[in-house]
Image (cartoon, rainbow, N blue to C red; front, side):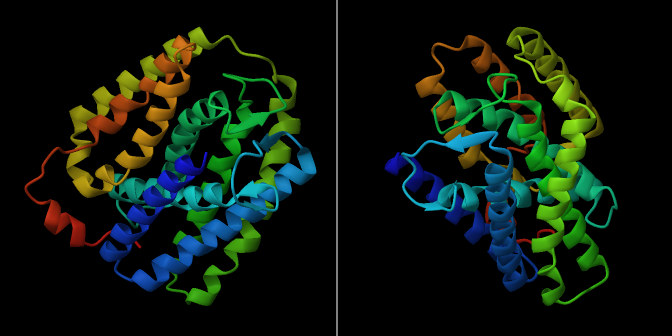
Length: 284
């Protein structure tokens, strides 16, 4: 577990260093990453304490309350990376960027959660697809979307860095309210163990459909190669976990691989301008 956490820390460090070098305002980017981490802790720790739907394996080395420190560092990377890709696809000033970013976080969490649970990193007390209830995946999309919407609003209005601090209240509280509404409005009544193979089929249909559409419209031309390559280490991290622990779960393997085609369709394998891309501007 120690090696796993060191690798995760290295992935986070790589992303933060490279992304900060490409940010128009590196200081504000770093502050926002810190706010995302603190907000993640506020949202997740209170969810664990209030609802008791899941818990982390005690083998994690350093905990902050009920949440491993490593997890708190990973989620800002997931959110910021999704925000960057959404901004490139729609344009950084498009009002639907936070919604698109939340959808990307939803996709990422839909892959991460089952692999992590099957690998024993954490466990849910409610049933669902691959032992992950739908609300477990939805929660991070809601939190990420709220963070992106609030910080994007501040950027549009050119508000000061101090205004960004309010995200520590808005995102966790908003996440709780939306989770409660989702749970009692729908998910509470459909919370059952799910046969994985039909969902594997659905995942592949959606995956190939999105990848085909992406290639047809040339979506990869909008996304700098570096923004996609920066996502590779984290993806490899979870696929290595899958290779280690998924030999007895063919449905999970088939499901996880289905997430690759859309991202590959967005990736330009153009290594000629990586140095320029490394230093180029990224969305704020």
